[in-house]
Image 1 (cartoon, rainbow, N blue to C red):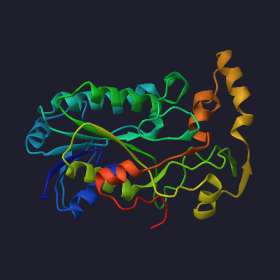
Image 2: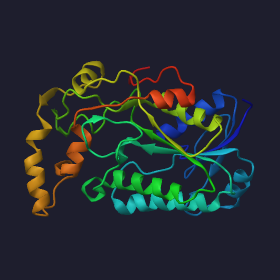
Image 3: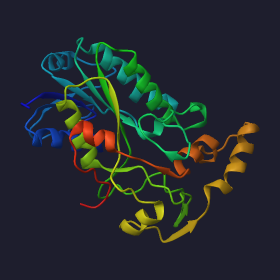
Image 4: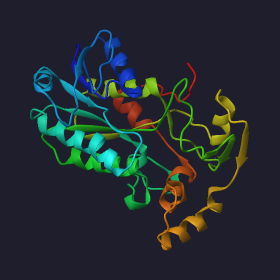
Length: 298
């Protein structure tokens, strides 16, 4: 495999920076696209927003072998996700030359909240309105990709990222001041180390890209209790509570159309805390990876 010319959107974010570093380490030429000025040693920076791209983006796309599309909002309401995730994705596909492949950084959040084994054939969320704005946006983003068959898209559904300083995720439960309500039970947490997710994105670009879906999840995943025992940023007090105890309240609030926090929605509760297992055999085989880590530490 020779050196590739890769355009990475969202290069200024946490995963974006890791992906730029992983691509450069593999000897590729990198166009690092970011909305704000940033330092990308070894890469060619492109400072622009996808919703209003300039001529520099078109020039870079003409010199690109594959696009790694990471630009997306991680927080905010539907309006923010429409602007920063969906409008940006539509604009990117509209600017792509026919045949240019895309590696899309998707999310495990698109899956339904059923218990059991979650793999690439598992059903997607059938009730997007009952989930948070992020999950709805990632579902819609995949639909945009599927609507552009002229640009074959590999979708990597990435788990909750872990890295030094990035140990917390919504699958543990809510924090109320110094107290963590640990709602997750004995099931595995869908975790992946940021640098391993970045490595998977670059490996996907190196393969003969085609339309496929791969779950990027760590090996031998821990339960919430096991994970909390390993991390450095522990809460002062952890209170275990079954997520099922909140489910009747969430169902009642939904039936009465009461305004409640996202956590008190049945679909959200089931997605985040139902006991699950997450095999990653397909991704490791497809990308030639022998191991995928989940540990937050270096």
